[in-house]
Length: 250
Image 1: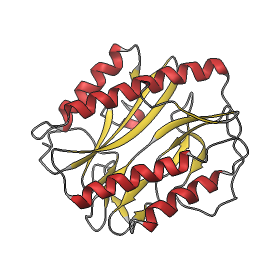
Image 2: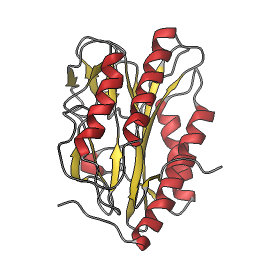
Image 3: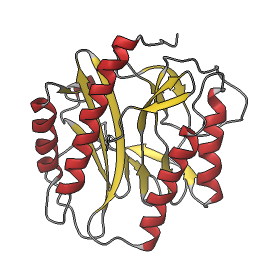
């Protein structure tokens, strides 16, 4: 069942989204060669808690970090640790914050110092695919039309869409219905209604789409070792379109 949120619930989710967005701004300022992923995790957790929220991922199904940090060939669910970031790396940071019982969720992939042209194109295409999907979030649109738009941008650029991991509904639970694949046929799937809140998150690989989970039972990497990117926003369906809850307000 897809849960539509009340205006009161959306208010809590806007605040959760603001906290997530401001944590991402802090991450962008902190990422530099020589910093460890554990240090980034500590910075993020301290800020989230300073805002009266808690990290959504901390303890989730046993996850030890406050954020997910995935470097280069790591797609998602990377555990913060002693890994040192190097010039030219890319790092995907997935951040969730729970505020008064409601969650916000957003991921972004950042370059560490100067990155290659290929890596930059990967980031640009993945971000563009996210916004191609968000442009179609509106009442009565079918869900997989959004999925199809994301897929077209990615594959037209010569990259691959990961199939095993998808976006999701979000609210009082971090993961709710519906599941939102980043591929599919248009004009299919449930119709969107005002009050639905969705975490839309394309995950893109330079090479082949196949992924595997490492022995830590969390970190997902590409099978062929090629680099990957992950961009995500939490959005609410409004009567005339959508509101991005995890975007910084100017």
